[in-house]
Image 1: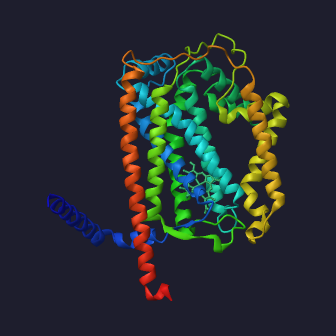
Image 2 (image 1 turned 30 degrees about the horizontal axis):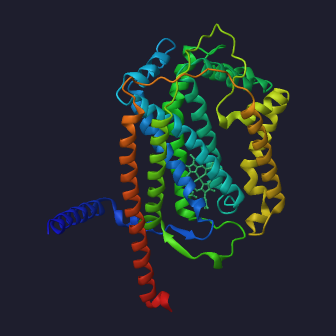
Image 3 (image 1 turned 135 degrees about the vertical axis):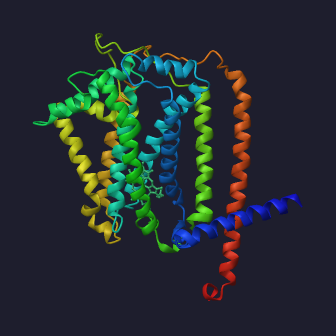
Length: 419
Ligand code: HEM
């Protein structure tokens, strides 16, 4: 009884709000337009989850980053101490920062996976060239977020890694010196570099990423989801409406990601290495984050100018690939491009593994979390979190199944589609 009254109240309040908005901004036309988006169901449908996963992780980075911004201080004197404070004094600061650090790895990994599936399924082919180009910009911005965030704790490793990273443009003849100077805010890495990187990391890059993402999503909404090249139409078992079905499956994955990130953050909290000392030489064996490793290893093997030229050519090739792969745009397989993509992937994997297994800086990191951090007392909370996630997942799946069943029933009973 109570349930019905509450449901009724809620429903009429929602309907009232909708009518109010509709009279002012014609909301139902927008809703109608959004409802057009359908997601095909076939054996490779999992690829359609990756862009949404990257988007969720970006949102999580913004949320956790905003919380850290309340305590982080972007100056040479205070940066390191303020991160130590977040890890030890600020209530649950260690949790927020650890989710942010793990989230960064996941965000980059999800973006890479999304990029690879879009590349190999030829989703860039006509008419999605602009979606692809906006995606390439998103990839660049994602990596820039990773690079600019790395310096902020002002540790020995982050200082020297930034020194190496910002010196790479110097290999470009003519403008290289100016670019490096611009990045560092001077000739050296200093407090000015922190100010610059902080502005980039918390405002300029996220704002640009948000704007380009809005364009990316608009294009996806306008064009719908593509089928992997070569997949016969007959293999599409169903078409799920995005709003009303697929989005709930997306939300299920986001819940799982949140659970995994929280578990990792509790189990293996982020570390804070020793404070940067610009007077000390770079430690032997210094390496950047995993997503820059293959490039770093390349630059160790060939003259820097050659390495930078090679990356520029690869980047340009990938950016323009929708216009070069004409066969794909004619819906014909293009094995030559598959071979080139596999070659590039193999190169990146080999150089990545090579750099990964090379010895790093011993003991460069140290764990630093609040005295109140006790894994044993946190485990019951983790279990509770997973029980809640399992319950919500079950509920979401039931909801989607029921929505699909009702949709099929409608379709079967609709004389237009039944015929
Ligand atoms: C911040 C990073 C990114 C986010 C948040 C993002 C988000 C999304 C979302 C939500 C979709 C629709 C669902 C899906 O296909 O997964 C999508 C589709 C697409 N994305 Fe991205 N994306 C990102 C990066 C990229 C990159 C790096 C590329 C490639 C260079 C790319 C190219 C595409 C293309 C071509 C589609 C259409 C796929 C199709 O129609 O099958 N995106 N993106």
